[in-house]
Length: 245
Ligand SMILES: C[S@@+](CC[C@H](N)C(=O)[O-])C[C@H]1O[C@@H](n2cnc3c(N)ncnc32)[C@H](O)[C@@H]1O
Image: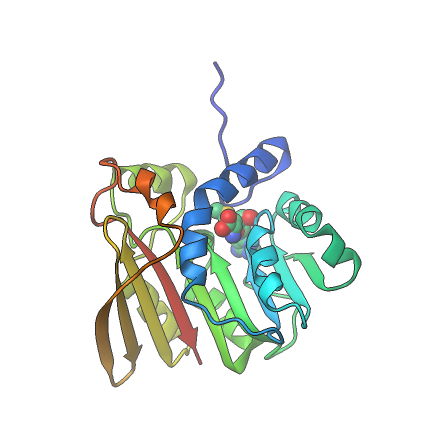
């Protein structure tokens, strides 16, 4: 039987469409958990980078429906799928999806209040320059919100994916350093070990770092059953990061 190579970093064609459906299923737990750490107001202008199927764009626009929401992705298949996923809002001009690369985005300086990146930073080129380009289109008091299903390359499963896909599973410290190097001034890291209901919140500036551990009663906890299974090591943490300039 032929083995299909799924390109997570640029899903294209029929296999790309299948993969985007699989990713919606696989990424939903971490996406819903991450969204519990992000305040979204109805007037926020949002950009979702690497928007994939457009499902997170839909989730975000439901909370910020008084302003237009934007998605961008360098895959034509992802763009097409995001448009289909949000057909009515796209037709009414409430959601705009464009093809483009994070390194050079077709948006004005300081256009967005919230910029999100779900499960995509692993593939971005020239990471510090990509983060600088995000900063350019982020409003002064806006937030850049990054979501990852793993903090670093936590186990052999991730090592295999990294080798096959040519992507990088950064850890919290690497990402924090890249963000500061790109000029962000405040970084808040949220970590949740999949095996319990505790969350670590680490707030970091150039002069200060505080940490607290709090209960995390994410209501999608039933999703965690599979993730609690033995194949995941305790080091396999969900992570989301909120960066401000
Ligand atoms: C693993 S998928 C994640 C999709 C979606 N955000 C999710 O959470 O399911 C990564 C997505 O990021 C897009 N992507 C990767 N590198 C990109 C880049 N440099 N610029 C724009 N999009 C990119 C890919 O085409 C793909 O749609």
